[in-house]
Amino acid sequence: MPIYEFICDVCGTPFEAIVASSGSPAPECPECASEKVSKQLSRFSGKSGGASSSGPKGSSSCGPRGFS
Image (cartoon, rainbow, N blue to C red; front, side, top):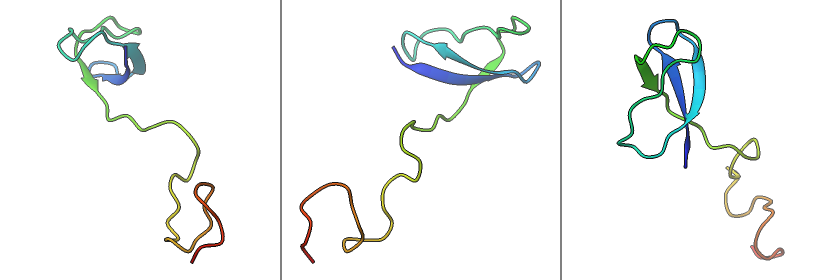
């Protein structure tokens, strides 16, 4: 089950909740118990910096080395 990020429309508290499916009802705010919450756009977790922006000749941690 995915973890979604929400923010309460009433008190502004950000929180995360495990939601069974996209059709499930929105969770309630853990701070004020309001059901008026908005799902936030989540970022992927992982290494900081993401993919290399230096192009094909830049250093990379994957694939064979020594090819131009």
